[in-house]
Length: 380
Image (cartoon, rainbow, N blue to C red; front, side):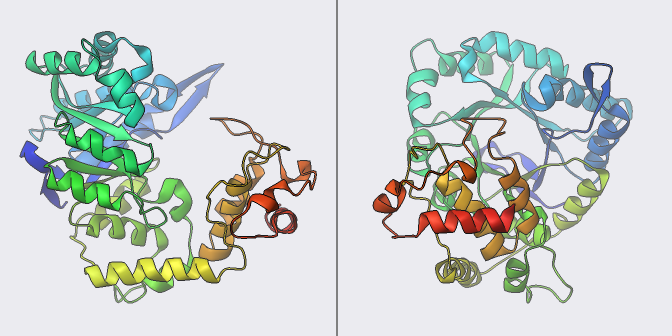
């Protein structure tokens, strides 16, 4: 397993991190449990293969993940393994009870110190208003660090990329967990800046939330000359992330033993793409978009829709189908419209009243009504 020095912490961490957000579960009666017969061996196997960083959070896997990670760590120690496994978990800022949340996580994990404690999913506004007020989470985190309850203060990020620099430059954080993959390279400059400031950089979603776990002929062809053997889309995605010299780790939410062994094999080598190759790949993907019959830029000028459709999201699914060949994923997501587990629930294409307001507002002058119908026909 390739390891890198994690920013200014000086710690050598594996380039693959175990994300404990998709551990296998079993239902008994009306209760859900972590399937320890599957989950614990997966985590132990990853440790044996050189993974020394595991990431969890209070709400993962129906609030069961932290305790399962704790059981895996206990089993690892019971095998008399000397290798330290570094633990990451998170503080949900909406709880407004920093010490209570931290103490609960320590109890669930059955440890005395969280190595990397994240301000969970903060953005520019929440950083200023929820994390930094006097006596708030940051002040308490600094005290907890002095008391040995936290090793390193970190943050995870889902906000607009333009708001991250302020958080990095605050000087309080030692690592960041952010999104970055072949389909979303919007945090590339933030990665460079965080690295320059000495932060450890962990990438979540290296396979784009599962989108790149399915074969994409376009992407595989673009990378076809990297190796002598055929390269599958998930491997290409992981290689691309790890080849960025300013990325220290790719965090993978692993669900099966096969995923553990395959990801570990990928991360057993150092991958290098020259800046020229990285640029050519990015340019190729952008040109493919441009030449597509449907190219919604996701500017959101068409929103809100009077009929409550999420037009940019619908077209995003069509783009993934037409541009990247990620058809199965696109159809699955399209079928879930109206049943989204998080955020507002939007209406299906059949709810369109053909009022035409979206077309009046579209800077691309797309025939939105016509293309909504074509999308529905293609992905239904």
